[in-house]
Image (cartoon, rainbow, N blue to C red; front, side, top):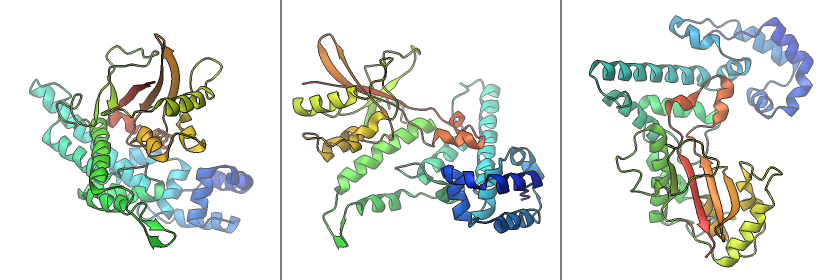
Length: 336
């Protein structure tokens, strides 16, 4: 793969080097790559011009690489950005074959072919159950997808060990095996929903089922929202405490900001314990909490647009969202 740092880019790096300290992503990549001096920049410039692009079929996807894409590919094991784009390029081809096949056979266009279902199941099995993968884990995940590797067993063991270490001593297992299986199963439901390989009766069975509520500002009459089954319950003291904390995040225009769920962990609650906080947080990452009243009844709302991969991936020029369908989460907890 040809990785080129132009003279103008080199001059920019040299002149703007001090600004990297304020760019978390750039700074992390620079540190990981061991680029800390002007001499290092010159080394990058020299080394990257020695490599040749041999795969002409990838010319199109390589041509829209950003500068940092090339730096990531050069310094990290494998070529994460290139391999990732190749994988998505293959995904595009699989989808095109599915559409062509369905048109030819007069089938609904969204009906998955066995080839595409198998590919999507590979993604399901090769992606972690919790948290977005960072750039350092990306190349391994791509490799696992291409190999069809199932990481579920090692994921189970990883979370089974979670919380068993207490200051270097083995403590009590944080979750029972049954709890862990439920946690991973509910997360897999969301992954399957995103990938379009969920169960036929997925809206009525399982942990995530169709919600009877929609956000007041929802403009799509056909949008389906989901809720956990069962919905977390709060006693009056817990409800009032959380309700009042959420109200403090309300914006001047009367709405609540996305990501205000951080208050669950930044607030010292008196009645809301960690178990109940984890129950509310569940499989969601950063989500929106709301507090309102309807027909004399107070309720707390939970809203999230669940993504298998971070939307920030679009910064690399890749619209990953077109390969999946974001599950919409919305439900209410009423005051008892």
